[in-house]
Length: 281
View: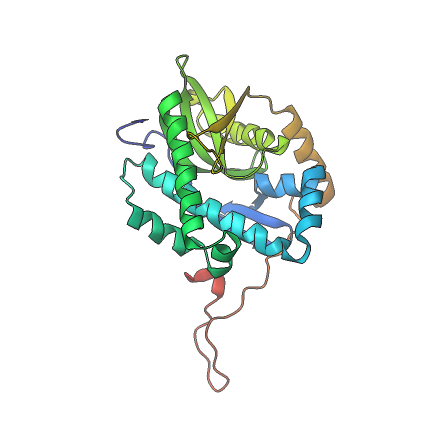
């Protein structure tokens, strides 16, 4: 694995705040008058139909679909966190992997994966898949978990990885997935490419890629890498549809912050107003 010595220091990270609203996830910059813009995934989920495969999944899981969705998301978060540590050049021991997995996955997740051993095996298989990708493509890592916001473009998002892949050193936005393939993933990558190229014009990316990790291989680790040249046409059309549907005449959005409950209460005297979205859970 090749990593720039001072990591992402050439690319300044914006100080971005996130809020969960009635329209989904929105972002704004700290220290300024908040101009909230939707995340890329919020735009996509409100415009694009998830297709036949998702409809069948919803039909099959029915009332358990929320549990299963959360289980897949929690396991994916654990895998991403492990990979982030690998990108930082750290060695992951089995004890550390267990700590990370059980930090993000609850008892329902463990049950839905068939027990603790099965869950840990699945995560380790995903990590083997990622290692196979790195050993085959030997990417040069430029930045990871890179948050991006643009009031001008009107959206925000976080790229898993910006790297140079292959003998031609093609600078690429890479998104890592532990789920099924979807056409929306490349569109998501193109949106991130627009943000990156605006914020880092001297280091523009020319390609977007989606790395699909596997945990079900039999004989040796496998993965699927889908890569295309940047083409933002479809993303721009989708963004226009979202804006036409949800944007007010003044350029803002019809979103409202979801109610965040207090975490301490007293009916006899006034106490500090501390809300759940401001504390670590």
